[in-house]
Image 1: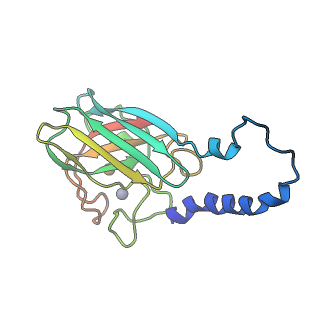
Image 2: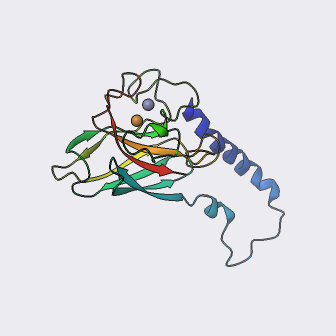
Image 3: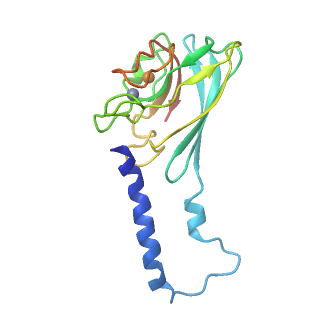
Length: 191
Ligand SMILES: [Cu+2]
Ligand SMILES: [Zn+2]
């Protein structure tokens, strides 16, 4: 399970905190020096352009990854997408070069053979995300979260990277393999 996975470092941190009093004999902290803990909790950030089927930039993703959750802002300019709901997912390979179909991004990020779907009792896989809504003018302003990390074990920025794919239709969050979300119409490299 990806959740347990993600919480593991937290348990380790709690353990470290418990052991901390034993180290209280160490020299008193230097004035003006920030505790290391605060540096570690600063979210990692990552930005990437969203490309449509013609290879044109239509917007961007902005990811912030904290200790227990990743938050991604999706921004698409007017005229960028067909109006209505669209399924979005993290796909396994960071390659958006085949703009006709975006098949090079492969299937959803899924390291533990989970079923697809945020509402599936045997899911979700690590690529699953809530749908986003494109306004009548084709613009999108959305923010979604995921427990899939940006870096480290099982992270989006692994060797071959990952991609954020936007689908033509909405994801029903249940049926296999992609919730009926249809063709891939836009893509952002995460590498
Ligand atoms: Cu997808
Ligand atoms: Zn999925």
